[in-house]
Length: 541
Image (cartoon, rainbow, N blue to C red):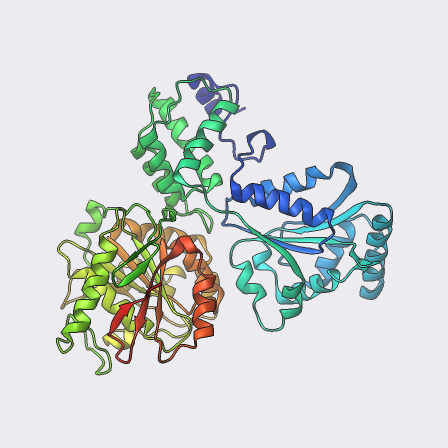
């Protein structure tokens, strides 16, 4: 036990550290999604379903769930767990082979190795025992290794799967399995489970539970308003809650304070941001699940707090650029030709602002290309920027079909890719529109061969958290829904998704599939784009 931890535990009268970073089953806090995942995976293995998936954001508790599943079978389960799936196919198979202890002398060929694995699993099945392969960080699996997993999923005898496989990873795992060429593997998935972040109420219960388990007394330092601040800066992710709470308790003990304030958690989270947390550790707020049909925006707007711009952000000056509009781009603040369209965008702005806690970061997407997604994002951002004291940022994150810079007639680079790759500071990349100073644009940036890796990085997590503190609203013009992994990554950072649909262009089947794939708690609204890209009406029913 370190001196710092001893000081915290002694100061608060605790028997142990309530927010230790290492997994401990005595601190397991069960939510409905965690209960469903544990019981479902236990059934999947017991009933020999073969292949199942478990998804959740980094820090949502996937490791704990997998550990509970393994413990549920006690000595009847032989487990091979792969923590780093970024291996060559032959390395992956050898890892499985050695983890299961089939034979320390690996067969000299892949064919013999596969045969030995199949015979081992069949033998254990005949003895009434279970054999399982758990792959963590499965969203990073190379396609060649996924092909090997497909072959392993074929192990069966007498109609029963002899090797149970669980792919556990972040939400990007689902679009990964949607790639062409992986249809057969996707069809093998018998069950799929997802872990949800904690709600504000669950966060309060979680903190109280861990405090009690650690021997804390009735005088908890976590007041209700403080826990609200904790939820806001942790997005309801248990691992980040633990990290922030441990830092806050240490600081409070050092200062001799027994009551925690909401600002204590925000300051701790900001400090952690400066240390460049891993991907998925952001201070973006989690989305709640209130659904309301309102006016021109059919909305399930997340009840997530809006970060107020800091004083330093208010003084920050970006380079001003005069807009040189493309003749095909009807932007109503500059083109007064369609007052009806302008009125419709103002209604959308009003519906967004009417929420008790307006969403601070929205992803604008569509079922496919050609729906008017970018022009809609530009106009909604402009409508928001026309409000007094509003500071709005439009981010072009559709790296494979970026159009914002083209429509506005501004340079494409420096932009988002240049910032994420470390080539340029954010201040050099953001453009402030001279005609509408409240509206800023972050172009896509120079083309890169690895845009997905740039988004799935600690630099991106820190950047998006920073944007929340500097802008009242951030709109992200993203790729079509489910088209690439970029969409899933952006979805994790945003409070909600606005789906842009053009009825005379979008196929109804594609529309239904796209909207149905958006998590209900993240569906912020559906905007129907008609013949003219700037004409909007409500999606009803």
